[in-house]
Length: 84
Image (cartoon, rainbow, N blue to C red; front, side, top):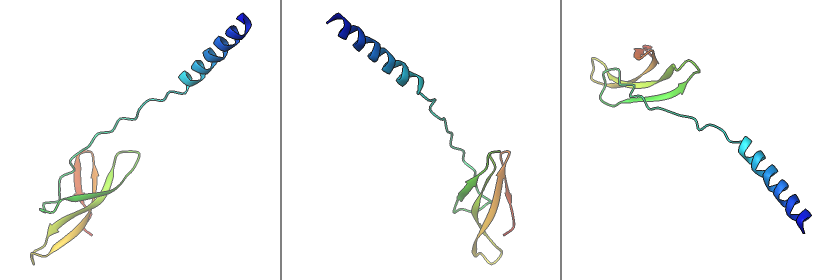
């Protein structure tokens, strides 16, 4: 009976060690307000690269008062209109 108990303790200890070694850190994220290119309709981010640069579109009004989406690059805290 003592031998079975010792085997059970060893097996349980091994299982705890294996499970404990597979723990992974939880990734942390933050949300950043990118702003707009001056429009009132907001901006939509489409992609982000490993350097943290974001591309997307933002609505702007032209002289004709027509709404036009423009592509932007957000980098270093600055949104740049790509003119398209």
